[in-house]
Length: 317
Image (cartoon, rainbow, N blue to C red; front, side, top):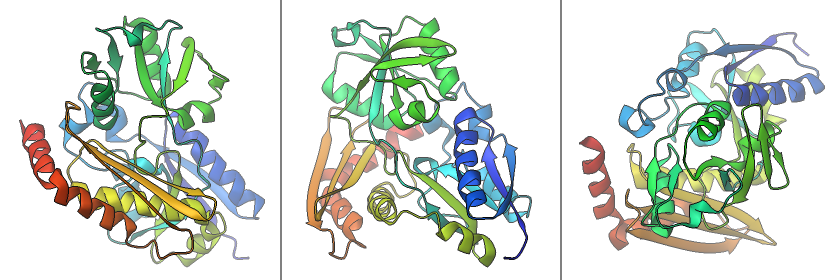
């Protein structure tokens, strides 16, 4: 085997480093030499502005894209839901690892105040905001940014009834024990939101490489999980067809159930009042390559085009 040290680029948050270390361990087990290179992204630095107001898709990935193109790192590890559906020229998806839990989870301080008429729930996600307001229209949503530890600390310090997280991130950091949530800065309870459709590719990790880097691509191909690759392809295709580069409240989940693939997608207005939902099931051995596009087109034809235009107008203000 050619002896080349694979430089693994990652953000420097605790969760991102956990993901990079996981990829490093898997590559080491296959006999590859590795080195982790951590960088700080713009999305980690600007914490006082909601993500959608920054107007940048891929704010957490751009810094690593530049580092790869400059030759400072060989590969980059990302939470797949943070990665734009169109990768920069010269960069390709090289592996999608086996998916973790896809659920969103409401974290609170052990009371049921979030069921009250006037609760305040924290999230920096338009998708979570819209789905929560659709279910609880009288609640208030407050913006919450930062890495997992920072967000848990803010929840502890504020009089909010709860905050919404991806369950996978909390589990990867070891903060979940049954329904108990315990981190260095927070102790409370987590309630899985079975009714909330997750972000496309939530719970999945992706590793990207330079298109012309055969060595790294061959190494990473051994880490790829086909079922997760198929599911996330469908979800991200649905997202790409719907949003066209605009941040919007979109949820999507493809799951294997027996010998079938079940897809569920949703587009909502920012205030949650409008909700366009679709569900399709196809045989697992059917051609899935265009399923996401077909589902998105159905949404667009049934009021989605007008809703996306409304969302774009609102986000420009």
